[in-house]
Amino acid sequence: MLRDSFYSIVSQENISDTQTQTKVLINAAHPIFEGHFPEQPVVPGVCMLQMVKDIVADKAQRNIQLQSLANVKFINVVIPQQHSELDIHLKFDNTDENSIKVSSSITANETVFLKISSAVYS
Image (cartoon, rainbow, N blue to C red; front, side, top):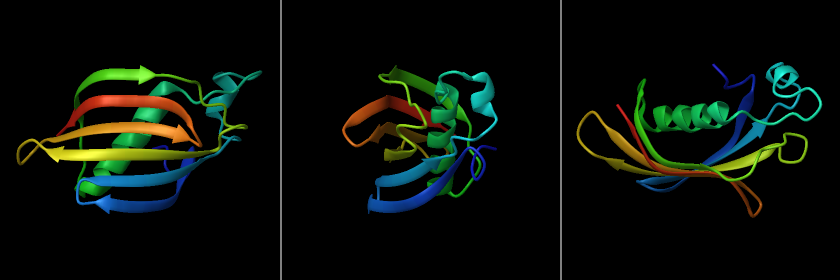
């Protein structure tokens, strides 16, 4: 997995029963940046999606799978040397006993990198 090698959790705050704010630190020396991309490292979009999934799984206290994803916008690229600390905001809704609907954003300061309007995990 990516946790504790590609990124680590610095802090996590439960804003409410349905919202959480997690600060993560990206490891700019991780080998993934040798291929993505050596001259200008950027965090792959799939890695951002995995960080969101990991945090949702922690909140749900179980293994989960992504079932659907709607209205995903990669707004800016994450350059780890410039934005090594990221804030991941999640809002949860339990759609039924097995599914969790999530909206999410990844930001640093006032820069938005990722917005997910609707992701369903089960």
